[in-house]
Length: 134
Image (cartoon, rainbow, N blue to C red; front, side, top):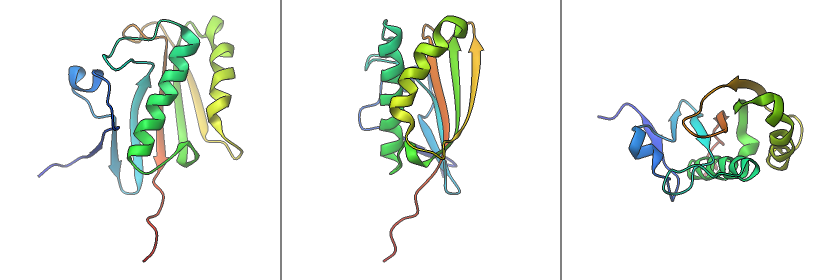
């Protein structure tokens, strides 16, 4: 019997199978989403940094939607950025397009030296919406 309730988006990119991980796992009313990158369908990185950030959020939103959630349900966010000194402000301008209204989720930004060919990654925990009564 499986011990994980894995969630996959409608059109998953190739990295999930290639690296053997689930995009997200549901547990006790929460959704734990693996780090989402700006991966094209074949798993390759989007070369333009701003487009890579957009695509990472699109991939994240697809995973959230597959679980019946949205970014409004996100309670904790971790961003990983290669070379944050030169890229953080550029990324943050794009993040605000997806961020929504206050109150905002908690957020942590981590500067890293390597993300397997990517320059930006977003990992979240969301509280799953209550199913409608009835």
